[in-house]
Amino acid sequence: EAGVAQSPRYKIIEKRQSVAFWCNPISGHATLYWYQQILGQGPKLLIQFQNNGVVDDSQLPKDRFSAERLKGVDSTLKIQPAKLEDSAVYLCASSFGRALSTDTQYFGPGTRLTVL
Amino acid sequence: QKEVEQDPGPLSVPEGAIVSLNCTYSNSAFQYFMWYRQYSRKGPELLMYTYSSGNKEDGRFTAQVDKSSKYISLFIRDSQPSDSATYLCAMNSGNTPLVFGKGTRLSVIA
Image 1 (spheres, rainbow over the protein chains, first blue to last red):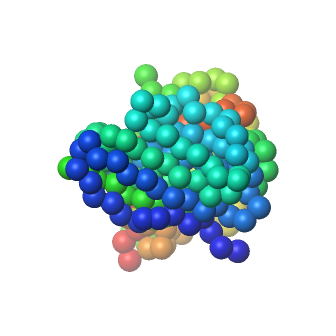
Image 2 (image 1 turned 135 degrees about the vertical axis):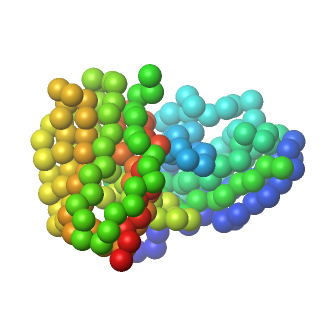
């Protein structure tokens, strides 16, 4: 079974530029998550989708971050404009069923963003 | 006070040692407790999952939850160099986002 795919793996941009990350979840997984992991911290949920609907985006900085899940499969996360404090690893995860606590979340390798 | 506290380490042990990793939390509503392992440049992977209080064992790994003390532990017996990674505790109260600890970096020296 293929895992969660993310691209690019690394990205370096100047502050105030825009950037986009892509995620392809495990086939058949209804729920998709985007997390931000700052160096030395645990992952923090940014947004959670069930199919193509948003379940939770309470911690997404909506003035600069946006995300969509096209046709309930792939997802993109965008930052525009980027700030220095956005430097982090952006992790995508997916789970099979509804957004239940007991569903195992499978993580992708992440995209490491550096904002200069 | 942060919702989940975890000593970031680093923790360095000799091969074969018993490792104890711990987290404390403040939210008494938390009922689901997980331990994730994260290798360098990789995403986290679920290692152990426990509901409410009690112990759970899986091979060399044992997870303990003490809800009265708001304290969870992960024990690794006969530690191996391949166990070298960052261990993250995570928890939530139901259909709420997982709250992760900062992670403890473990090195097992051969």
